[in-house]
Structure formats: C-alpha cells, structure tokens
Image (cartoon, rainbow, N blue to C red):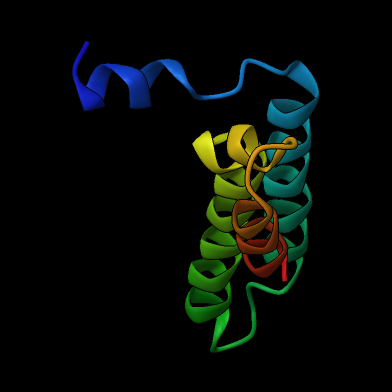
Length: 83
C-alpha cells in the first residue's frame, strides 16, 4: 500500500465533523451576505473560507486521526489549526 492510499483512507468519516464543517460554512456565508455592501467583503470571504478549511483539516483530516491518542504533537497541531 502506497503512502497516498494510506493518506486517502485515513480521512475521517464522522458525520459530526462534516456537519460541523458545513455548519461553519453556512454561518460564514450568511454573515458575509449581510455585509456585502462593505468594500472589503471579498477579503472577509477569503478569510472565512480559509478558516473553514483550517477547521476541516483539524476535524476530518489524518491530523484528527493521529490526534486521537497517538501523537501529542498532532493534537497540538489540531489546536493551532482551530485557533
């Protein structure tokens, strides 16, 4: 088994993590649509998408699998991503 196959299979299939990620995206979308009249809404949208991607990496990527009792450093990386 290659490294890419292991990496592809180690993503979380937890519905709660995917639901939380979708919820973050929905909340950010609603908040950004309300402030679209502001001139900096594109930057805010970019940062919001980046924040949702960081949360998704922390919750459903292989980092989450490693943080569940295997590696303390992965757990700390998860904290940094959520910050």
